[in-house]
Image (cartoon, rainbow, N blue to C red; front, top):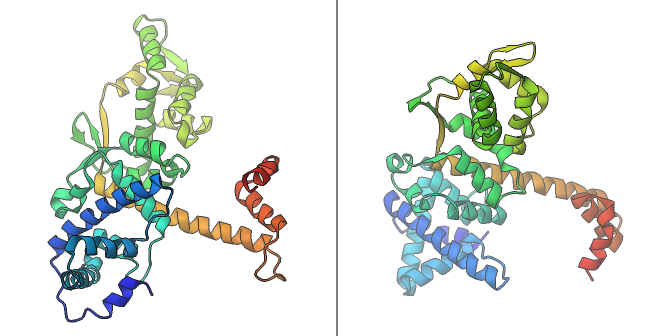
Length: 338
């Protein structure tokens, strides 16, 4: 039981603060936690767990012990009261370790990095639902955040389907209704192709306008479609299916007139920032839980079960090999742990 849980058992006499006040308090705490973590990173010091930081924050905010105690107890009661009805409060409750499903520190650290790199102030996500749900972000920006801040997490793969499901697709400023996931994927991949393969697209268009070409082998477009979506590992066969679904193809050739007509329409793909944050956080939770299981399995397979409380270097080496692979790097372990 952490300190927050202990306080919870002794604050039945207090009354919870309002939900609005609680939603004002949460981003203030998160902002101070980000600033604190940044300072600790400079000194190469471990971050405080959220329950420890929360107590530190409340003491510094309210100074006098009596006022600190009263406000802390009221806040804790409020977290428990409003968590079932508001996902934002529920997440913070888990970060504090109140009740069930305590959130891992690694998830919190990743969540704070995400909040820092949003194109809007994360304070806006804690306003009333109508206001907080109004802020949109381009799907390209979402993936830029993934690439720049979470390159080794493969979030672009793990989150793509959920992001597409939650996104709105506009064609020439008109929202597309009742559009299925398959169609959304096609639009997204072709949208990336148009923006990232501009030189190829421009040359193709010039040749078409000059009358030099009326069709083109599908694989010539597919090569650039693959490069434009390299993070998603599209295969040549998958590209062929996308092209057949969206363009006039005969004998593996794409009709260029129909091809360029498609790109006359302007598509926009946007998602609510609050949905982007929730989907990404859910993936952080799953990812670290899965990683913990994998490491536990490697550990169990590497340890000598007959020896308790002792790990031999050979066993430790096997664990590192199980995690990082590639026996050719074995010499690096000795160098690192000298």
